[in-house]
Amino acid sequence: MKISSRALIELLGAASIVASLVFVGVQLAQDRTVALGAVFDNRTTAGMEMQRTRFESDAYIKQVADRWDQGALPGWWNEDIQSYKDQYQVSTEGIYRLSILGIIGAMYLDNNYYQYQLGLIGEEDWLEIRKAQAATLKGSAVYRAMYSNLTGLRPDTKNLVKELLAEQDIEG
Image (cartoon, rainbow, N blue to C red; front, side):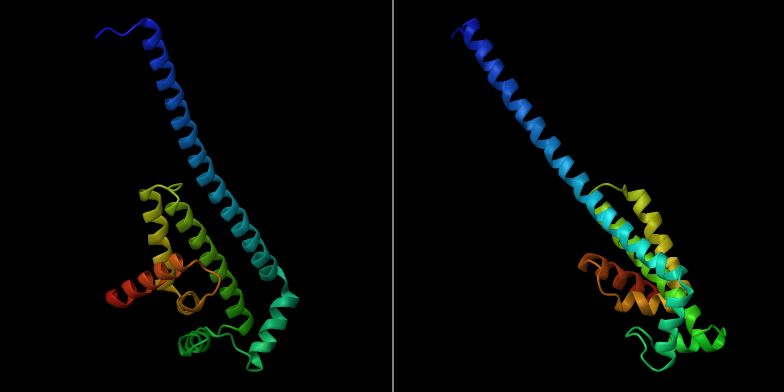
């Protein structure tokens, strides 16, 4: 069976069109992934900025601390927090500032975990981020209490936090 040059050229032309369409499809999928990551990162950055603004506002900090001192404590407040506050003689304002830093840290974790899940952060980098977050949780009763009761995190990140806290329970 002999294939004419015209048929061969048409076959090659059709194959190149299919290859081009596959390339465009792959490129669109990659662009979508990057766009999803960028949107999530922008939203996280805005939230972190809002928390930073709260952190820097002495009047706002005092207002919240006064409410807490009057008994309107946040849901994550527990005996570990009270013990930490008493043992280290940290003011309620200081605890609130720590809680803001904890929220920022949780947002950072949520963002980086999502970027990792999208494939935008490599495995090695992710493991370093995870290790740093585990160390932060291990070193702070405030962060442990907060991370356990945070709202607004994606379900995958909530499960990750549970894993990190469980690992600390195992380590003692």
